[in-house]
Length: 186
Image 1 (cartoon, rainbow, N blue to C red):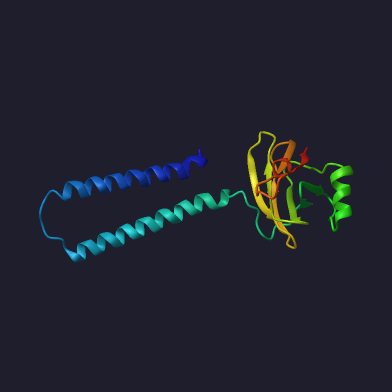
Image 2: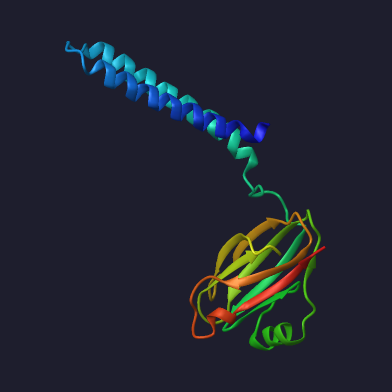
């Protein structure tokens, strides 16, 4: 029930907007003078109403945001390096081309537990790539850029077990469509 409160608020605001337009349409048919003081009071009341609505909307939606708090420490760190045309996904840092090749060719797949906070530290050894996480149903869960010389962090808490796929979302060359990686959530 509480998940529907923001939708209810949006519906209430939409109904309010329709009523205001109806009121203005009916009032505009009658001629008369407009009192500047009354118009200012109406503007003030509308502004206060909108600010109140915005405050309620934020109060209901911010606690449900899927992002972890900045001070929260991740349960697991997973290192990801993009390089044409693969993602190396590892539990240990990958610092050079030889390590990248070992992880891509012979590395054990990374397995994380459902419910734990996982931090992906993502970089690239060649060009910009788009590191994107897809769940087993092929739903995009999150995305961050993999850039040479820079480590981006993406934190995520996985809810269901399965094989998760990593695809590149930024055109990086002729082999871009086959650039991928994967890991498991148990």
